Amino acid sequence: MKILNISLISVAISLVFSATVNANTVNLILKHKDNQITKYSKISESKKAMQHTLSALPLNIQKSTHKVINNSKYSLISVDADSPEQAIKMLKATGKYESVELDIVVQTPKPITELVFKVNSNSEDGLPNDRYYDDQKPYLGPLGKGQNYAGEYFTGHNFEGVWRIADTSARLIRVGVADSDFTQHSDIIYSNEGLDLKERDNDPFQTNESLNERKCGSHGNAVSSVISAIRDNKFGIAGAAINTEIVPARVLDCGSGGIAFADAIRWFAGDTLGEGIQDISEPVDVINLSLGAKVPGGCIDYVQDSIDYATQRGIPVILSAGNDNIDVKEHLPTGCNGVIIAGATNWKNDRAEFSNYGKEVTVSTHGTGVAAYSTQRFEGDELVYGYSGTSFSAPLVTSAVATAIGQAGKLSIEEIKFLLAATSDNYNENSSCILENKPCGAGGLNAKAFVEAAIKLKSGELSYIQNAFAGTEECVSDIIDDFLNTEIQSCRLFEVAFNSLAQDKQSITYSLYRVEQGSELSIENSSMEILIDSTQTPSVLMEFEQSDLTSFDYGMRTCINGNCQPITPINVSLENAPKCTN
Image (tube, helix red, strand yellow):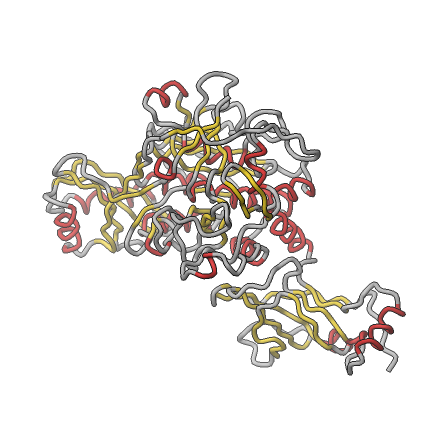
């Protein structure tokens, strides 16, 4: 058996502006100004109209494709021009287009392999018996210190805790992975359907032989195996998620491709791509994109509309932050709205030196020496590599989100963002994530706390107001009253838990409101009373008269980096509360 290392250079996904096919060919994306599509419009007529507008352009058009996305009309064209700048200038001058943007190309450098890991068989009771699990344990176990081939480490996201509490009979969760060059792999759980936007069909799989011959490797297998490698089968590695299957979409050929990943996002969400491609049988539950590019402004309309197509249907889109050591706002697609962004930390739980950063990063996960597959050279030989890059941080977050949906049920994207951030483990005071002005997100992913919080949220047990001594013996509250010797009796001391599993976060604040019973809990309601304007503490003690708790409705609001959600009701319980004697 071998376990090999692929350096950051070999796995970093780097999107760049498209090079011309030859000296005079430029690939562009046009967003038409007339975007009024109604339910009575015919898509075919819209495409004919878009084609008609191209006939009058002052450029020689080699190829054109027309698409309607979220009521926006796009033409993807290849034109002859002296330069991209010239073509863009000429097209903008016509006044017919809302935007004119360059197409992009995704490239993955060829792999470099070095022997690095010392592999030991795992024998610890209650943990997976996969052959290479010892190399995964530092980041799949709870946050803690230890020693491994890299020296002393301080990392961990507690997927082990999730595996111990999870209902393994929960429904199967489908994860869409848009990536490069998948192969059928005996230890990765793939769906029986997929998409290939290079060959324009529904077979995303290449052969091991063809990829190995071209020295392509399989970045798609690597990302997918982090999520859905078969666990506890005495073979290879352990996937982090529970009850998942990967729906693969091949959008790159040997690590190179164009804007196709945006089309894959919509296909995952149920859109029809046509041109001989069958629709997906049912939309996926989560989408993972481990790719990115330096792009001024961080997003283009075509990608944003495709992301919106998925998120408007409740499908979270989870992205790798990127490996360029820049702000995610200057990176595609992390500069787009509505996404969940995963940064990378190293063995010391500092920001990995390559990881992009910014306040838009949701959480970070381990991104150095992550064990994953590439291709299989022959049956029974699992080639396990150590990968570095945010490409492998994103599937850890995706694994947690997929598991939470399976265990708790449907979650809104805002709920997922809030729970991921609020339950994350705080960085220690010496971490570069704290000392440098390069934010790594609210903290390090704590998969167990996140999944438990999702379950409690759906059952109504995550946020509440209840007596601080509910359920204790009456004598206990009497002793507490005597010991504290305060003016607040224990019968009037209540815990307000905004998130009972959260940690204090500078980036997250909570507010508490109340209205007379039956009134609207809304910022627009002038009669609403603010009890806590803003606190970073997810659980506080307050004095309440029990009659107040029965006469008012209470609500809470959370804000992340100043972005506030609507007020939601908070449960009030007087059950088992000590009775007041006066």
